[in-house]
Length: 71
Image (cartoon, rainbow, N blue to C red; front, side, top):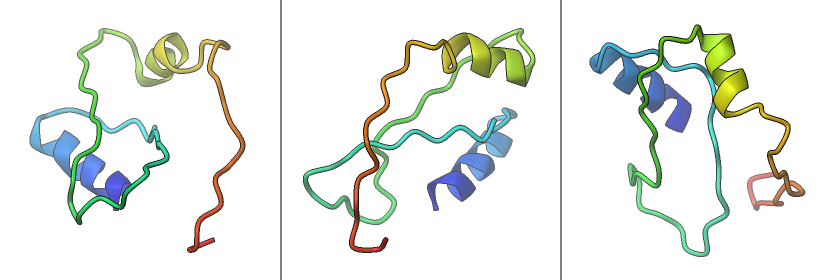
């Protein structure tokens, strides 16, 4: 649902959703449609270069996948 909403929102603000979604473990379940985090940034970089510069730096910390009741 978040990815579909991100694409719609990006179109509404003349932006582009680059297909990057970040997730966080929550202690409580949020209500439907709750916004937990969003990031908008203008950049002269092309999409792949932007993702490489800001999100694929090699210094990311990745944890083990979190098991959910939905699989």
